[in-house]
Length: 340
Ligand SMILES: [Zn+2]
Ligand SMILES: [Zn+2]
Image (tube, rainbow, N blue to C red):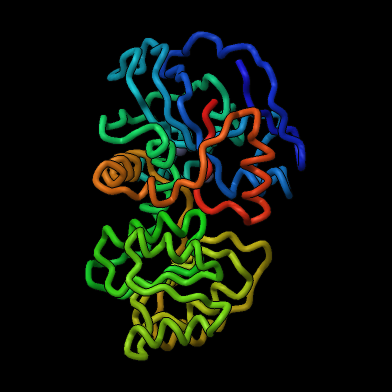
């Protein structure tokens, strides 16, 4: 089979590999229809290996048809169209037993630690897979995993319907977070970015206010939209050095700051301001298959969000030139989906 193999920084090769061996007991063998890429893939390509264990087939966002069902992968049949979660948890540790499978003590991720879906075939455990509703096309279904990550983030933010929510950085995962916050009933829903095209997409996804922060102060823009009090929930998804401090300044008394964007170095934060205004600082990582993947599929089924974020569909052979490179350089307009 053809597959995109990550060997190290600047080194992703499209290679011929043997097809996966027969399915082990709990596994499905999936013929991949579409696999999407994200900043995780491009950061591994630029700065890696960060999380990846090369050589490994990339791809942690994918959909396909089941071609083989392991003896204990109950509930699936050959021909089923499924999406797979990315993280594989052990099911036995303290975190798994309390439903926080994304924090599993022996968590492994498809496409980083184990061969992933940027290939013609992939092996995935049945317990992280979910059947795709007929109304959700393959391009959209390839976005179920990143949308699940975003919905997990919104859940962690504690956002309630009718509360003011600001999302800083609406490219990549931020766009999906806007969609999730809109579905949750945020009002106003303020999207902030330095790119007008990304802001236009955010508006289509349900942002009620969009602000280009090249032109103005980010906290001021949020305060202005919230009667000077700040947003109930500020979601920092830009990963920029100044993002967390700006998020804190724009949070309401008793509100919450959620850190989604990964910071590349320690940052200074005014914790006095957190304490005297009782602002909660929360974080989020990946997703929980049982809770977030079905929710993502339902939202894809009931909205045109996939259409709004889709940039292009490319061939596997063009993965680096037309996918990973534009993503790394910031010239991708939205989600890039690969047809293996
Ligand atoms: Zn991703
Ligand atoms: Zn575990």
